[in-house]
Length: 602
Image 1 (cartoon, rainbow, N blue to C red):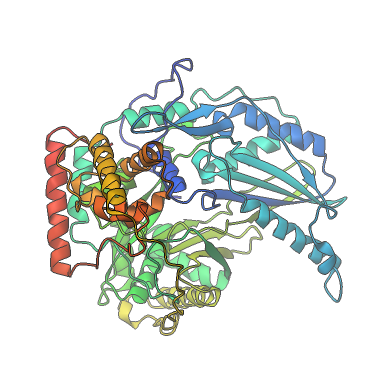
Image 2 (cartoon, rainbow, N blue to C red):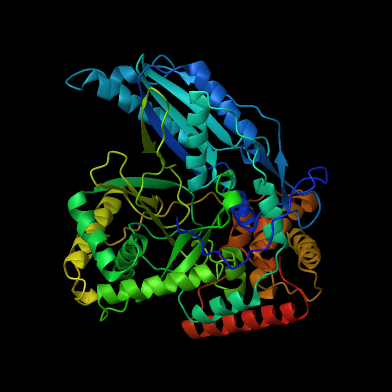
């Protein structure tokens, strides 16, 4: 995770009046909450770490240590509730301490019997069973309103062998929060004196952050920097891209051995760039090759822990921002690394603008088949995801990524817990686009590219290994005929249109609503769309998914869909490039006109 540049003399974060009602969510939480509304009941934003414990474990002492950490950190007791009036903003609800540590063993339906026979070593078989169970636990969705959003479970593999599985929802946690959790867990297990509660809690930070105005200079930099940059990365896929992106994903694990990483890290030192920058440059070059494009936007996590008082607080202190990598084929890899380092410093200087604000400002096409702005994420840490320790035990961390995909491709690289300068690479991919074999070929090609770039950093990028046949030609599956639905009556459609016009007027605060206006072209935001979704259910009694409102962004198309028109499809064919550019210019002009009248869209 990239550490955020600390501004000179940051303003003071005040403590909230804890009797003044539910605290607001942060901007990053707000965007993530909306993503959960789009795809409810999925594990996309679950963060899970399994810790293999070897030695004599005192289970009651471990359970007490977990309870102590939960009692100290409000975020671990937080749930999220939507407001009851427009714009239905979510708020945080902080509950009382209530920690559990259920214990499971081989008799808990784990299915160990099918693995323990034959030539497979019994210990390895039990370990495999434990990891499969950990994956199942990692994939269990959270109920954001009822909670809790932290789960701790223990698998007993034997008297001296246990697996502790810790899962948190990303709304309450981030990478550093995991280490804080395990550090304090170690203190509690060792019987160290209890710490005082943090002077600041995450809710204090969230309220302070939401109250800060958007920095016009930072927003201006982003507007200038990304003007004309493609906001859709058109990767080749195994399957045709569906009209609506699905949440289901797959994970491919790959080990980058020391023989690969040592030369790469030496090159970073020689070029005077950070290892993160070098690996990001390699990943962006890899994406550029696959997509056949020179300019690539990659989403990277940026930490907001820029103050000492936040370092030991558990919470979601992270945002994702796009980094533009101009991978022109005549440039050398070394030159591109230096360029990416400079770009990243500029991004960190303008880090107070959120991804949601960027999406609104830059007005990209809201295509439900693509994530907005960026469709590829990247994370890199030289250390393992966490470094757990418990007195008298040997503790080894194992990352357990959920079976859900936020974007088309998400590459995470961490230092191996086994040491030896190896690194663990996990490539998470959308399962409706890519097959497992393709992800395996992608990881292998990324390694070849990294090796070649480290060996000849001054050579032009076009000389690096080609990704030919990494993704085969897509196959078009046979179309399945849906059962026909009866056509809606004209009165039903017109009545729905009238309801939608009134709802749009209320949410957008304007009267000039046309039946063929695109919601986002007239000032709508993603969260305003969530308000529309709520009002449709409340006032018309019609149930539909939030994603369908992205799929049908005009009143005419949405009314036909809600009224049951069997011929309803996407809002229209994709316009030619010139028409698309004119449409986006018009949308930006409308948004600027709205802002000049004092409307922010927030």
